[in-house]
Image (cartoon, rainbow, N blue to C red):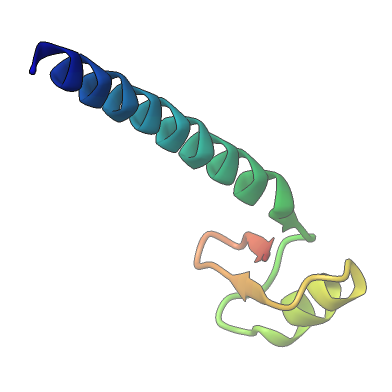
Length: 71
């Protein structure tokens, strides 16, 4: 019984480590994919969207702070 318990514990720990690494990689790639365009005039989304499309992103969002974020 103790062998099974140890094996389950090791498998569980391995799955936890792999899950944590996958989560970290996803977060790193998602933040690397985001790119800023020049400042935008909130709430106008047009120039921000155009800039992001030129950078081969699907969407661009203009925030009240004046930042245009592409994703």
